[in-house]
Image (cartoon, rainbow, N blue to C red):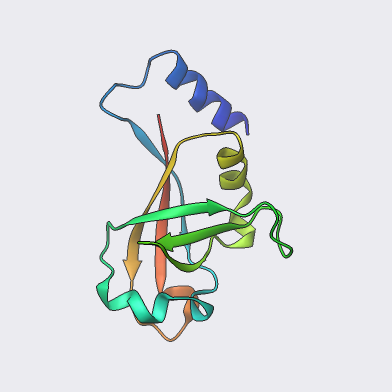
Length: 121
């Protein structure tokens, strides 16, 4: 949380350029791709595609749950072991963006899609 507060302060002080500075917050595999729309859409996906991060604070399995979508289609979730910082940032109103960093039809669902999350300053 201290890291996010520092980044917020830098943005508030105007140390981030108007051109849109962004920092990589984390890189993760997609969790649960075997249960959602990944299999239907993976041939259309390209590295660099924008992903939506949608907070699910009322998720009964994980209070820090963050759904990952591509063009309005649910693909899966940010892994539970890696979602706390992103959940806190979203809850605090931080501007985050995500992009597809790798995609394949690998039989191992944890290797099908990887994505990066950035904080916008």
